[in-house]
Length: 266
Image (cartoon, rainbow, N blue to C red):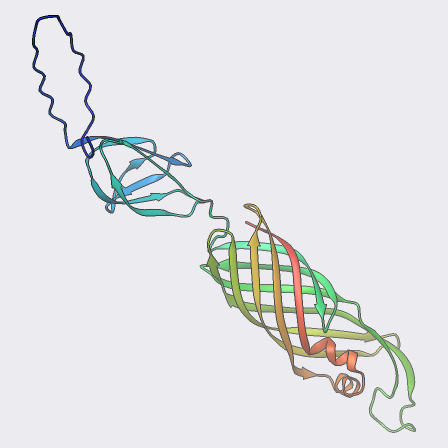
C-alpha cells in the first residue's frame, strides 16, 4: 500500500480449514540512504543524520535532504519519502571550480598587440590577484632624433626598435557558474618596454579592463579566454613622439586584445 511499510507473512493453507490473517501496515520504516560518491554527509531537515550509506527509521512525507562531500557541489532537494519504497539515492556533481585556488599557465595574445607569455595568480574567497609577463613580437625601424633637440645638437639616426616585454598585474572578483565555469571582471595596469639597437630605452604605462573567462577541463587543468581593452596612462617622451607618427607603436600600449591560454590550478 502506498505510504505504508510492506509486510511479508508466510501462510500455511490447509484444505477445509479457514484461517484469518490480520496485518497492520506500519507508517514508518527503515529508509536506506546512499549517494554517489559514497561517504557524503546527509542532513535531514537541517540535522546531520550520518554519512552514506546508512539507514534511519522514518515516516512517509516531505523532507529537506542535503548532501555534502569535499570536492563536490552540495546537493539539496525537497524530497517525498515513501516507506513503500525505502531506498533513497542521490548523485552529486563534481565541483571542479573552487572559490579559492592558485593557478599558473601559458597565454597567447592577439589583437592590437601580438604576444606570448605566462600568467600566475590566485583566488581567495573569489577575490582574484594576477601577475603576467609577455614577450611581444613588434618591431619598427625609424629615422628620428631621440633627444628632441635640433639636428645640430643631436643628429637624426636610423634605429630599429623592438617591443621587448609587457609585464603587469590585475585584480578582480570571480563569479562561479555551475561546476566548471567562472567569469572574473578584472582591472589592472601593464608596463610596455621598448629597446633600440642604438641603446634607446622607451616605455609606456597602460591601464587594462577586461573579463577573464575560465572553463575547468579536469580537476587541475583548464582553459581561459580574456578579452580586454588597454588605455594609455603614461609614457616616455620618446615613446609619445614615435607613437604619434607610428601607428604600430600606439597599438603596443593602447587598443583591444584577447588572450587565450591553458592553465593549471590547485
